[in-house]
Length: 439
Image (tube, rainbow, N blue to C red; front, side, top):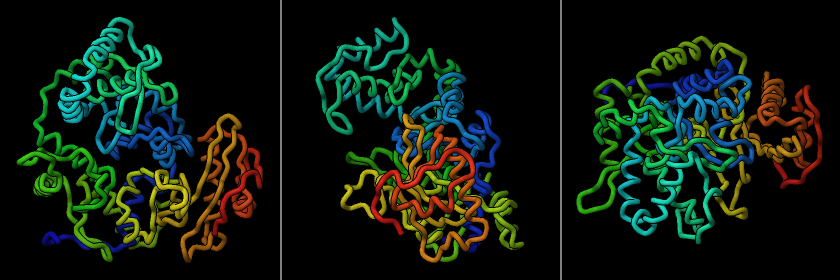
């Protein structure tokens, strides 16, 4: 523990996280593209994932925080106004375009890697793609003749698609727009301001420090360790070859603490030192005051929201267990026979407590959201929890609107909860789909 480190109670730490994440109350940020920017300004980045089973990850993150959220608002900021862009930070993320110089390291490292493999083995195709896009404007993989399959990150894929992605990862192409999950690429100089592309390059250390701080900003209470995926992309070349991440993070973290950018804290019942971003001090002080006065989170009646599987609040699953008593694993890549819960299951936040999990499915063609299953944490009784039932109804009504669906359906195993939680608006359907028994 760092000397003179403040000790927080678990209640204060949970309240602080709800406030820091703009979830107290949920969906409390004013709607519109400006609301999206307010969330990005607070969190620094939002992880992108294309799976749309219950809504894409970044849309779910924003829906949890922005009133009446619509995915078109983020698309406008990304592909029309271009104040946001997609790049690798912690995996693929949506980032403020103004910070592009601080994330050039991802382009540089991808270029270094691909210049030693893909751009050598497929040099003619790379030149052909760049020339066509330079001449014709934004193109997708469908605009090229089909090529043979090649081995790629996730498995065999079309050669054009692979080289387009390699050119984009290396900063030689930019993302002009998405149509569904199909990507259209253009030259970066036609997408991004010259002042950003030509800006003086921060040093590798400065870029890495910025990336490290971005993880602490997004989560709000990370420690020294945690799951490896939290720290993706923060490494340096090790002596003798290979990569070294932990020593670099330790050195940069000490720099951030010494500069005052991170504030060390300890939490009752949680091992190790945790770090609060300096700009989050007001939320920490508010949490101390609210808990001490017995006030509800954010001074409003506790609300319910569905959290995205890659919501930054869910990044550190060890902290979820020790601080919230909540064991969460995103099982989308777990073989069905080994899943404990389900394919695409979302945590349920009530105020500053994680009280259960829900498995929704969105059928956009049918205009239907189906609730397959609901689980409650041990000791939580939804009927007896003051304010929970109306808050859950409101959350489901808002989720239905977010999914642009007209019908909320309940599987045979979840239908008893449908009788309790069906919101007053839009159409309801019960017993439409079967699913394994919930508790």
